[in-house]
Length: 199
Image 1 (tube, rainbow, N blue to C red):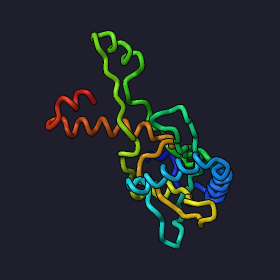
Image 2: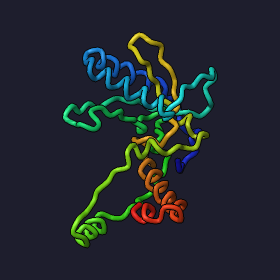
Image 3: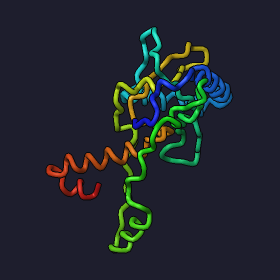
């Protein structure tokens, strides 16, 4: 993650994340279907290695706990539930993870260029990279800035986890994901020229 300020300027953030988790569980208790989808989503994060439990007892001097909640869209066939990370939540110092990051700027083509290309051919194909952000690991030295709190049941003790991947809700996520795909196209172009050209 590209920083414009040293992350040591961040204050205490765990209390806000804990309050948000408790508020989320108040909602989940009333909505069993939502509760089940939320647990499945978070278990998938664990299973795929997108987050890992923090087991050390001592907190690092510099950390950030990201509050999260879930958005339920029953009409969506692909993603009826999405967990939203709020890296704009202020810490006790009045700063958030997002306010100390560069967003990286826009490096994808502008909309005008994309629309013009649609007129060049008779057929156009649109594709999506499944779980694109989640397929890109972040620097392990920065993972303490992507801590979350989670518990699988309402009465379980709260556990601490570190997100290991580019996380939507952070200012630099779009830049990091797009820049990684561009670099992948360059690095693998000699072995996969057609895919590289498309990317």
